[in-house]
Amino acid sequence: LEQQLVRPAGIRIIVSSIQVVPDSSGWESWANFPFERKRLLDLIVDNGIEGVIFISGDRHFAELSVLRPEGGYPLYELTSSALNLRHPSGRTGGNRFRIGGPYTRENFGEIRIRWNEEPLIALSIRGLAGEVRLETSFPLAELTSASP
Image (spheres, rainbow, N blue to C red):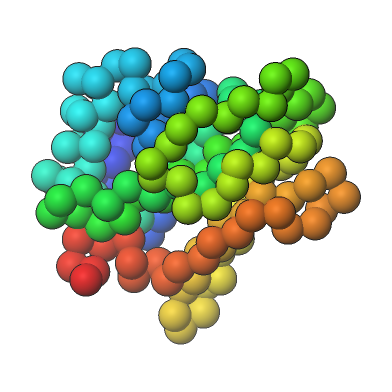
């Protein structure tokens, strides 16, 4: 992964079966592996690796999260699941980095990238009929170490 992240790219979408950004989900997530999570986040920040977005699942609900690491740029995560089965209890746990959600019905995630003179990224959670349930958008320029 490290070798791929240092290669030139405008956007890097890192897919994880479990959540990366939340640090205390109470369920299976990178928070259960604090040293490995820190190593991944430090790799991104310390090496100025730009354009990273995380997508994840395995929670049986959906949410949008953003981590603002010191010395880095905002790291967004779109968590989407499940398309066919809601979590039976409906419990979502805490997430201090949550910026949208939780949405506890069946859902799917969408990433839209507008590549014109000012590239824009939109992350959304959609219901089964395609309706937007959660959404955030930001300029690609925000995903750089030089962003304010």
